[in-house]
Image 1 (cartoon, one colour):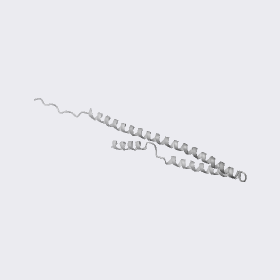
Image 2 (cartoon, rainbow, N blue to C red):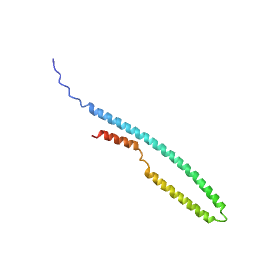
Image 3 (cartoon, rainbow, N blue to C red):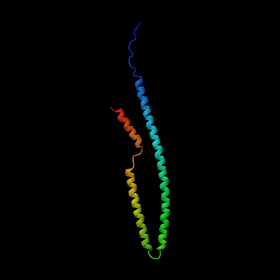
Image 4 (cartoon, one colour):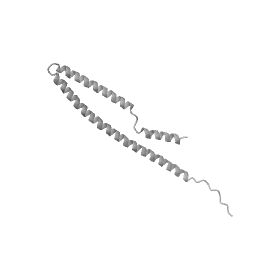
Length: 127
């Protein structure tokens, strides 16, 4: 009987498994990125619509109240009312701008879940 030489380990499977695992990892990350992108778009659109409607109704209210105040004090203190209204509008504008800047500074970065997942994968792959 003829003895068969011992089989050497095949290296063909290891690169294939690595490529498959890498493609699976990439697929998962792309799917997560796509979901986060959809969520960001939906969230941004909702915020834009609500901000626009709030702006329109707020402006209408301010015009109405300003006109009512100005009409009621037209004969006696017209200039004082105009100056006070302008001062109140300036104060409101400054407060809103400061809050907007604070919100922009403290906002979480977009796609943070994808970035965290990539960092975890990198930690697992590196020795």
